[in-house]
Amino acid sequence: MSASPRSVSRRKFLKSTLSATAAAVAAPTIIPASALGLDGSAPPSERVIVGGIGIGNRGTYDLGCFLEQKDVQFAAVCDIKEARRTAVKKIADDKYGNTNCATYRDFRELLDRQDIDAVLIATGPNWHATAAMYAAKAGKDMYCEKPCTKNIEQSLILKETMKRTGRVFQAGTQRRNLPHFAFACELARTGRLGKLKRVYAHPAGMQAMTSGWLLPETEPNKEVIDWDMYLGPAAWRPFNAKLLDGFNFEKGGGLVGGGVLEWGSHCVDLCQWAVNDCPPPVEYDPPKDGQLVARYDNGVELVFRETGWIPLGSCPVRFEGEDGWVEAGDSGKLVLSSPALLAGRTVEEIGGYPATFHVRDFLDCVKTRGLTKGNAAAACNAHIACHAANIALSLGRTVKYSNETHDFPGDVEANRLRSEALREPWRL
Figure 1 (cartoon, rainbow, N blue to C red):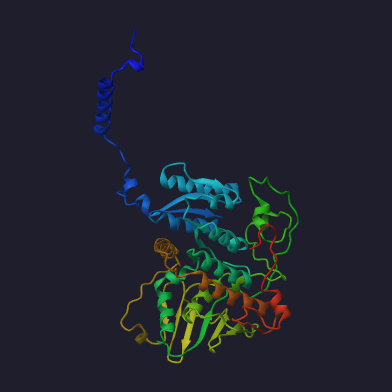
Figure 2: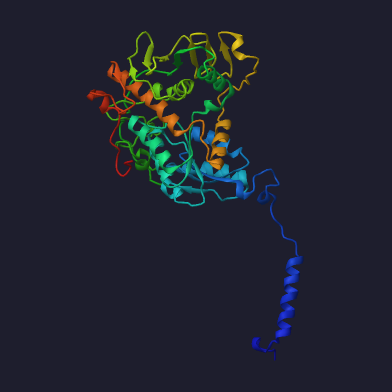
């Protein structure tokens, strides 16, 4: 008969315990190289855990830029479309060789995760500001695609929210981190062009449109496409598959963003950088001879124009001073009024407006708590300029904006377009 547990002697117990301990110490412990950062990846303590909200065509490109970074761990995706959730999960799982990427239909569930440090917001523009403010209140830093806001009021709330919560915000205006655009803006900011007279932006279309309604179609199962969540803060309308791509610009008063807000938010952002990110222009004229002209307090003109550009690729900008000018575009090339403006410098040419450098700037600021190139204050001013220009375009007359009261003093029609009602429960 074997001894009961109680009959084992203290000496025998200690001897067996010490033997087991020695064996455990002697046995090799296998730690994956990735856990130590020996495979080129960052150790866990230095990684930024990222989640994605609304990852479609542009978002998938952005995600690729994030996944290139060795210190990023992409942990979760949220999308109203099941097919997109599945596709993004596969991209992440294939990257890491596991099945760990979580999927969500409601972005609030993703934001509830305490392990996520930052989010990539690449929904339709209808959602950008609302999702960003929810993310900030949840303690997440964010990279947010543009246009970042639907109206002037949202632009101001976005800036205030990021300041109050201390979150790192990067608008998807990635050209701020491309060398030739940065150099062109530097020439304007530092007085190398002489006293600045005009900055030019390409709007890629100057027209006021409405989102409208399309004929009702059978609404899909919520798990396949969550139509109610897709509409989010926008006014309700019946499901139509054609609205799933390209909708989301709707504004109160029937005004939508069009090219002035879409491409304009890139080009005007660079113009704002050229004028030292000062407050937006205070006067906006309707289009005349193919140009929409706005004026800053100091007399510098912001000119939206479609034609007359040197062929330097998409998103061209031009800055003119009393002593010279510079023009740049997405080809990565610069044209200068004089070679002397280079002052012996060589400016790297990077064409195709990649976002990799912009993503890297964002991640570095997440770690240092620094100010990104496309920070919320800069984005606010650039977007207000676009929204105000759009209002002048829509009304067909000059409007005057106050940077003190953040409205159009005494202009009832224009003030109706500076904000809009949001559908419940998405009030900011």
